[in-house]
Amino acid sequence: MRTIEDCTYQEYKEGVLAGFNLWLDEPEIWTPEHVVNYLLDEELENSDTEPLVDASEFLFFLSIGEYEIRNNILEERIANGLGYHIYRYENMGRYKADLTEDEIEEVEKDIAYIKSKIELPEMNSYEDRNWKE
Image 1: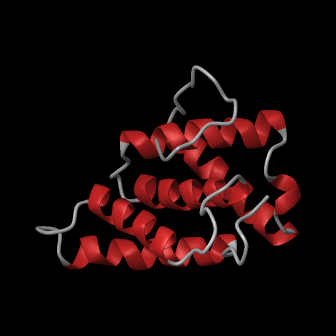
Image 2 (image 1 turned 60 degrees about the vertical axis):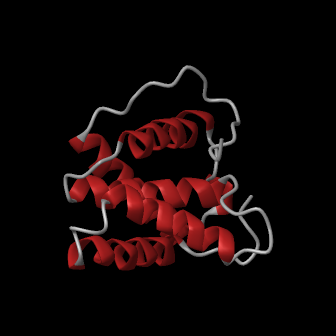
């Protein structure tokens, strides 16, 4: 399931790039952690429903993680989110039914890139959980 009026994976990636331009433009003010918090706040403000559910949350974490790894600024919370969501995608078959063919191709390309650069953390549980806690 995706959030109503959700973004495509490409739109998530574009939003992450735009958000991280704040960090690139003003690194003395914006840290990667501040940018991710800002992106989360924007998602909450722009949604009439609960944002970031299931596939939406997966795409959000994947787009942030891919950017942070590519720029050598990976935060622990994002690494943990990647470990959780990539495991669920690959081993439990989650999210795929909510993605388009093009998104699946791009997601799998990004997962391969992520896994080539970092060892994903193992989680105690891969059951449904609330990441906003």
